[in-house]
Amino acid sequence: MTPPTELPQPRRPGTYRVALVCLGNICRSPMAHVVLEERLADAGLDGRTEVTSSGTGGWHVGHPMDRRAAATLAGAGYDPTRHRARQWSGNDELDLVLAMDADNLADIGGRSDRVRLFRDFDPLEPGGEVPDPYYGGDSGFEEVLAMVERTATALVDALVDALADSLADAPEERAT
Ligand code: 4NP
Image (cartoon, rainbow, N blue to C red; front, side, top):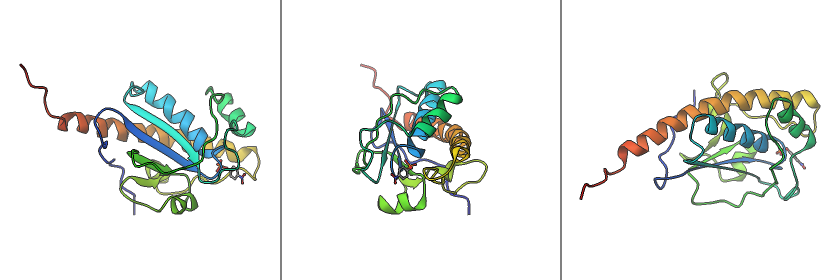
């Protein structure tokens, strides 16, 4: 069954908060973070969205991205240098939490309307996992980037719709 791509409305009008979660926060979710932020800026939504990423494990907190992840992003024209790894701490303020694989999803409490798999939005193979490239070769990082790029594009389309709906639902300003 194809997972739903309609997004929950923002908890509060203003900023839509998206969190990306993997295991170490040095490979998959940072790559998705950098690509999604760039796609959102291209769509003019950078002022209305906030993207964060984190890992369920704390081994790499404060570290920059894995050098293979960074090299793959840089080779495709993205800036990987600003990332510093964080550990997932849960957050009731988030509008949408997207896990990279089923273990990550289970580790943050499982699926809900606001907690899903990142690749639920993959237009090519919806509902899959982003495989962990950490223990593999460089080709794994290229594969992750391709999944992340096409999924981020579709996710931005879904965010455009959700934000348009939230504006339409907002009470009209009263003329005084
Ligand atoms: P990530 O990859 O979850 O995509 O950041 C990993 C990074 C580090 C480890 C595992 C996966 N590790 O075990 O240190």
